[in-house]
Image 1: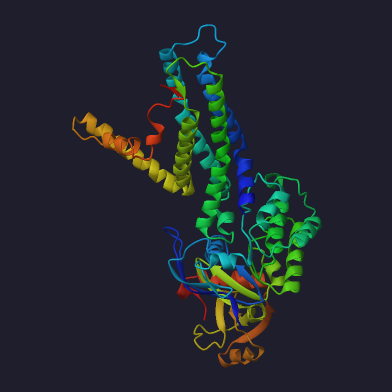
Image 2: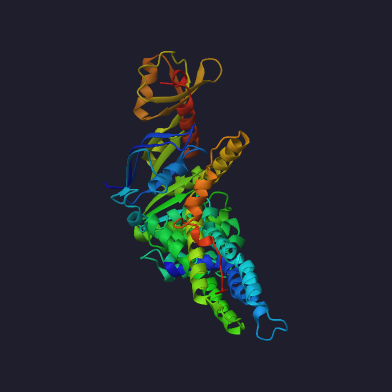
Length: 302
Length: 218
């Protein structure tokens, strides 16, 4: 399997406080990679490093087989980018913005751009500054798609948009991906949205990648267990215990990763009893994962 | 690429360019008012030269103002978008900067040509006393050079971040502060004199702005 984006031992420090250190990340070619993380975790910074908008202190970034930021013009000509905030010239109309953008991209598809204008219901004579937030979001997605990119890098493209606009934007995105097999690297706060469309998930927190795995493994591997009579020594657990909280009496709730059904037998061997196993959806799994990651070492389970 | 960047800059700077062109056209004509062929009391050669000289102060001011305002307008859309869109375009940064610089330079040719036209027209309309001659082309070339220098300097300063601009201003402020303190303390330290010589005297980069700007001279 080849990777469209590959980051190795990336280091970046914009100032005091926050830093990205030793970041490794791989986005498989043809995948839709969801990049999750709370505000300030480093998602936007990582995206800007990937696109060569920022210069790393150390490490290696390869995008579409080319080193970044050295080969930025090549990579950017094949990458559609939707930034967190629309940073376009506010004086230009939608039509003028399209004309401006088309001059820079050799694969620009004017016919499809016109179709998207119609699909999104955008007024081409309206100044960009006078568009609503939703309309700006649509213009940004239109610009990214009409250049026929091999890679789409989307930084919270639907953040703050109403469900109808969100659906329009994501439908256009998925339509393009299904037809052209492009790779998508998308960051979002909307966990459920990513759950529906992504096949890989990476979770970032405080400048570090907490986990990176196929969404099926992420979804299936994280469970909430209801346990009674658990011993204090848990050195032999066959799974990864992310969190452990008392539930009254000897009952406890555990959040575990790497769970397999044949691990039920473990509880009998330590004199405990497993009362129930609950599936966690992506959002619950994400929250538990972050909570565990942030807890001091001694407080983590397992 | 150049055309779309030029169009974008035109939208940001058209008022500056139009007003600048009108001012550049009108200035030489106003400066020879007293020498018009139908004036009741035409100026003597000395009076005319003094009048031309006093109007001449406005040429470098107009050149500097045009250079400054167009340079700011050139980077305005990028500053406003925190350079994210510009940096995500698929071309080397130096080439993008050159496209921006070129578009501003091209738009500035409008006030340069307007001044040439105004200067030629003014010298044609004026009834010059004996011994005086018009220099419209020399004045227009000097104006064009001054606009280009001002534009290049302010373009370079505007190209940086607000931090860079702050550093430049802070350096100038520091030199002035040291000079004021040194003077107050009664020392012989003279920082501004050599600096002024280096910048404003030939071959200093700002020498073009100094001296007399005469449309009509001996």
